[in-house]
Length: 247
Picture 1 (tube, rainbow, N blue to C red):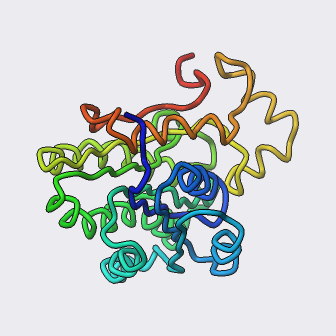
Picture 2 (cartoon, helix red, strand yellow; picture 1 turned 90 degrees about the vertical axis):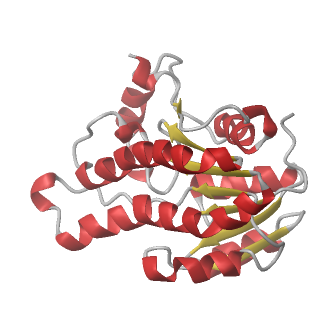
Picture 3 (cartoon, helix red, strand yellow; picture 1 turned 180 degrees about the vertical axis):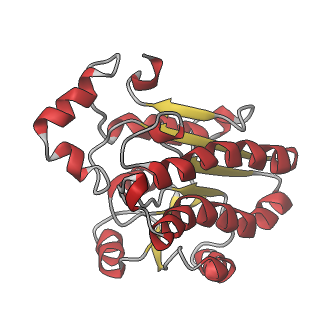
């Protein structure tokens, strides 16, 4: 029921953080995984050091007009994609007073526009197959307002509604669309948090469980949403946050 063996999965943001960890986990469970990110060297190193069926596409997802061509390149190594995981993210961490046009647009493009247009490019093949999975990455800031997070929060709030609308548009064709909203996990985006032990502890204390997340905490939820076990779940956002948003 939770099997992903033989599925072809594209994961954006796969050069580091959550994207990299999930790419490695799914490869270890028999999936054909294409990592997508800007950093060619990091992707190449991942492929060279990972056992299993791996490939990579070096691409700047902020170039929205290029996404259909990028989607075609992603389908080259193993054929049409069964599962798209949109894990790439950008958090400018700017106060509302300091947000520029460029910083706002960059956050919206990477966090919201790229996941939609990449999915849109892959849906026809999923529709023809009668089966597909789209997994978007939302955030605590989809629900909570954080200081210095207005552009990121606006984009991630949009991800939740976009996921619902994707489900409404495509789920009758056998394509589910869901989102995962992580709590605090150690990644490049959250480095400023984890580099401050006091702040890291403060965030951990705000959870029901009493700790921040580890990458292993995301493996089960991601694999669940990739698999047939989640066949009747669509349009939902799963908060993997240790109960941070429950309090």
